[in-house]
Image (cartoon, rainbow, N blue to C red; front, side):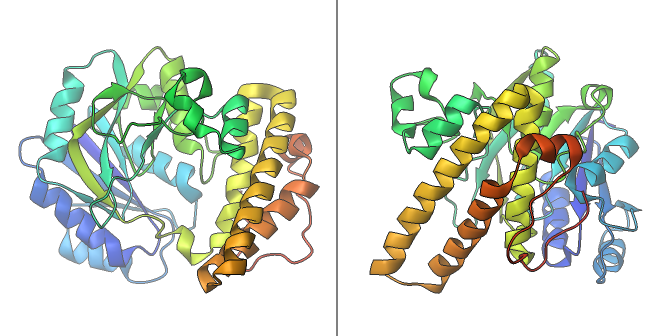
Length: 331
């Protein structure tokens, strides 16, 4: 088996059927298997998959294991030389997987691979970025990303001037589409399950680099990513989830002092973003902006109260004045 495609599913009936159809319609020359790891869907998603795609290997986890653990179930069951981590809200363009696997075969020093990702309207969706650093967090917080045009010392959370249109090595690629060597990802133990949502892809790619391999991006292969299908169901909850895993990432790679420093950068960023959105709301009110401001308010209050070291080491979270609806309890 050349390729194992692992798709994590959670009530994704409305998008996963199109995703699976695109895989079978667009992949022509490589033997592959599709594994759907289902995190306890409560609608008829699994029944629909089994009816329309009986060749798909469905694993029913019985509950929501979250992103990393749910994908790890699929990774462990895979038999391919390569494993593709793929979101259910993606569409594979014709020949993309055939070409990317062929490309990977020609890059023995690379351990993982990404491709060009498009939004539904055909515009470029950023899917490859530099690694998060304390310096980068401050550069992004203070809106100084433009300095990255002059020196890589000022790289933050993007590659200025690069629109995913050339082949290059990158720090990390988005978890919506990561092709990785099976032997490598299994040796690393898959995703680090402390990153239940967000930063799991960055961490995985960090460990690929630490293992002596690079991450290669090739724009000649393309997919479409609808984006945000899961987080739209409970956006405030996922915002706070992202804060937790962000601190876990900084703690893992920068220690106690680093995670404390990252909190200051996060607070500065939230303050300036809330200020900017507030000004825009004042001159041009909208319900979307109002909701965004409320989300930023919740994130700012949570970060103001949190002790990031106690959060990571002891699981100690701050209590908010009003818990956002839909907060996900599982860690």
